[in-house]
Image (cartoon, rainbow, N blue to C red; front, side):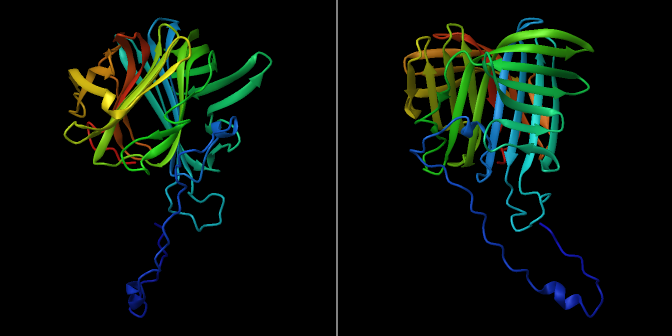
Length: 358
């Protein structure tokens, strides 16, 4: 909150006791069922909503198998500078997280943050978001469309192109994804599984050619945490047969599921949606962080109707601790999926160290 500076003389002290006029609440856009998404427009930003993220995770097969990577850009509308006319006002904040999992070894992490128009920006007509030299954008080429990811840090860097091999996957009801029992607990949610990765990875000072598979999520909302939820467990898996699986549960402080959903697209492109009462997450094995003391169920059995799958982490310690824009500790890493369906993808678990603040 901005505060005016006053000259604190005895004559002006009564002025300080006068309450400032109340600001009207920010009118964030609602998420509504039945809205038809349009592309490439809806690959772009939706600044009227409170929160948005473009989230890419992947598993490389070269320069070595099972290197996991993640790059996420977040857009936040904090509602603190709505009345300011300056283009530099903090009406939109952008931040980004990048990570690299080296199997059997370690997790590397880097982050960036800036306000829009001050070292960062986004497009509202297509996917194009950047913070400094970090960038995620969609390109039209003669061979078809690709998404390009570019990030640099002292520990690692990569420059990847992601080429679609199958259609978009609109989560929920045509992209309208429920996150709780109340109607306002929802998001617009688009996934693009089975993206073909090509490009270069710089690690330990060496640049190497890289290839693999990735998963792209784009989600925007105004409210998704409710019903007493403190966090979520989520998986996005590129299945070995060419299919895709997404499953999540919203979880309260006691670890009880308050809402869940899953979607499975098989190798023939047929999509099956699983309602909340058809999805169950059961911890099998926990890993305890020596830093945060949080205990994460890194191996989980997930039941989807008559199907049963289990996660197996490539590395137990894939806990991330970020500071921008606020301190958040969570687990996010590459896992293998085994059981009725098999594949590789990412497991994300939030709210185990502290309740997640959205």
